Image (tube, rainbow, N blue to C red):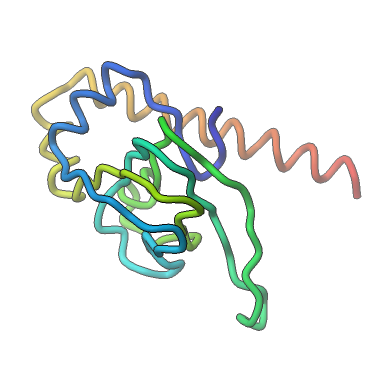
Length: 141
């Protein structure tokens, strides 16, 4: 299931994109990236679970927004926009994650035109989920 921060990736797209990156192993509690950091690549979760967190307004407390697991792609909108990371992501359990640099992703998209449409679909899905989530929350208050 997709989340506003992690896009579900179709299997064929996933397999081809994974070949462009590097498989990495992480222990529980490892930080993949921090809010405000440069978006240098995307993360394809192969196994394990990650948590999306943000700091409180005073920066003292971390709040968990949601978790994601195998099949999620992390950081796509940040990498495509060139904007800094919006959230901090840590592993909840031991994880195998394929890291694809921004350069590798852009080269993959340049040489695989159909993949561009898949990325547009993934980003559109993220926006739709975020919109529906915001509507649900505004209905409560």
